[in-house]
Amino acid sequence: MPAPEWLTRSQNPWILVLIAGVCTTFFGLLVLFNPWDTVQALIFLVAVAFIISGVATMLEHDERFPRTVTVIGGAIWLTTGLVILVWPDESLKVLAVVAGVGLIVRGLLRAGVAWSEQVIHKTYYVVMGVVNVGFGVVVMVWPEPAFTVVAFLVGINIFIAGILEIAMSFELREITRFH
Image (cartoon, rainbow, N blue to C red):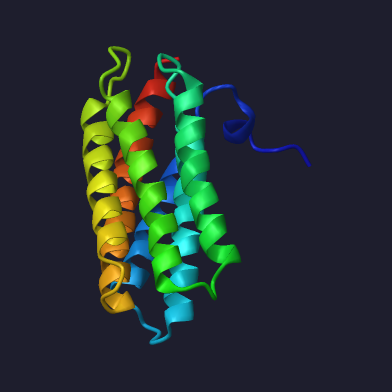
């Protein structure tokens, strides 16, 4: 059985970015409202949300923009999620540093992208860059409070990333309509 046409065409598969954005938003809400009371569940949710957001970022592609940037940004997010998933028993401080570094590096990359003249969705990159760097710094500087505070900050960031990924998917859809 061949793959669906929308998945195999050379244009951006905007629907996959939309699905990943919805999943990221959902996981962000789960982290924010934490229906489970265990730290392990929160760590798992944060890691999965980072991984899904990383995949969505790698899928984002505007032909007028270097593909390398979206792949590197997504890989940072994906790697951060995998590191957190692989080391769930490490201390909160180690997890906060890993998550914080991932947020800061991805945020700086996104903010740097906004300076490119080729980018048509500058606002998305600026907002996500500022949000990522801000939350990354807070998570790294303030890891000692209860894990729920750190998880809440990361949950807000994940939720915002999901909403912006959904918005990006519709922009990508418009781009692919005209190609």
